[in-house]
Amino acid sequence: MADEHLNEPPLRYSTIKEWPEDERPREKLLKHGPSTLSDSELLAILINTGSGKLTAVDLAKKILHEYHSLRKIAGLTVGDLKQQKFKGIGKVKAITLIAAFELARRLASTKHDESSPIRTPEDIAHRYTSQLRDLKQEVFMVVCLSSSNKIIQERTITKGLLNSSLTHPREVFREAILENAASVILLHNHPSGNLEPSKEDIHITKQLVEAGKIIGISVHDHVIIAGDGFTSMMERGLM
Image (tube, rainbow, N blue to C red; front, side, top):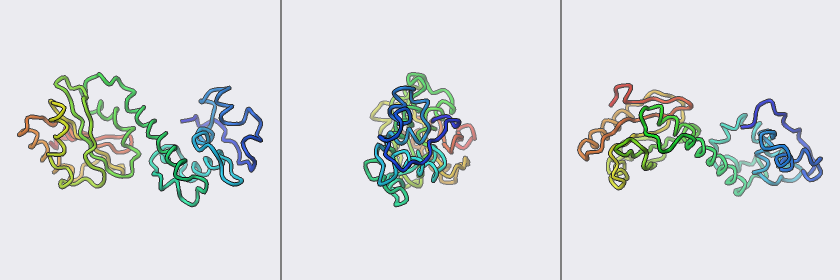
């Protein structure tokens, strides 16, 4: 994210080609580097072209003004960006923005050494918080571990409200069996930001722990991501 001290360019009702060269986002990036660009200038490069009298920078500023931060924009859907209030942001531009934020999330989630073993709930939270914290719906994942506690595979099991009918042990442990995993960690997010496990969360966890015992694949933990925080159900004694 660009530093907050960087000045946002004013709205201009002229094409970017008519701007002084040093003020055009692409030329500015080439000459001075990406860190010198404001948030709206970086978004404008992705948006590429304006609409009517509005430049790509103007459109970027409208989106930033509406949602106030890149974090909130990162959680938007294609439909959100295609609203009438953002006239000029069609399907292609919306997809481009969504893809850019998804790449940023994936980069953040892989900044740690992927070959390092998972030793604590913090290790899982550090790897997946950036991937899950901005999502608007619950996502339930299973992370498969080797006998040395290294991640060998991850799989999204469900999207939407978490419930036991959608998290059947067959679906949860299928990938673990195929990968010859020694153990798994369950993982899901709370878009509300509430770190407290629900009754359904606790019920599902206990059900899957028991299923794992029968199959011979232990469930090490169930980690809930909520905003920048997390809860380990193992540490809370809820398993």
